[in-house]
Length: 103
Image (cartoon, rainbow, N blue to C red; front, side, top):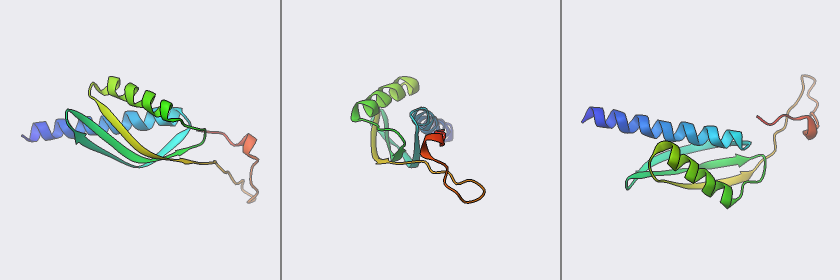
């Protein structure tokens, strides 16, 4: 039984890692990610801070990509908050947004 639990925890961690990595490539950060077993797949919840607009279609594509990567059905239910990256230089002066790199 402990082997199955370990396997399940590894799989949930894999879901979170892939989800976070894909969103990072979309110029977004994720907080409060929770992965819960749901049927034969997983429910992913959390808060996404999007530095570029993320549409529901892009979230659906992410859901498909994540499902294919994990090999199990994934349902994504996230709150998307538009965000802007601000950087302050050593003198405390804001760096213009056009020069602010997006990770």
